[in-house]
Length: 160
Image (cartoon, rainbow, N blue to C red):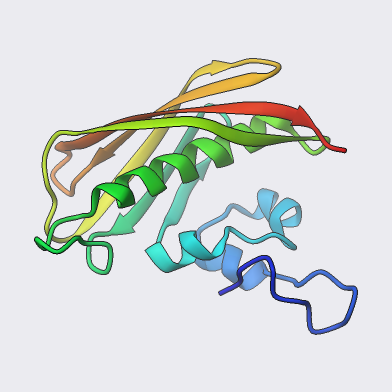
């Protein structure tokens, strides 16, 4: 697990986080881009694993266990973490190597609870523009029932 702030083993060298990317299900073609950034400590801690990654559609799973609130159901914040993760990665892919995505708004509506199993998040692009992206993220349980619907907007900026 990496936190993107821990110094590399070799001073001045970026850490190689390929093992983290493999564990998170990042496709081979995206690993060179993320090799020195990883997927982020929160993604690792939450157990998010990607199964499809593109600007138009992003899919991942997350376990309910370990991500619950005091009542024993999936925490509402976990829904939002999944939504922001999927929408932000999709926006970053859309932005390309010379630009970056910054989340500027996220909202979620919770429809039903999940107390066990895996949840699946699917982000679908609503708008992929030059300066903004918008994705809808639908979270479902193992039976395909909708748990929440979220929307995330990312601003696209040029790298400095």
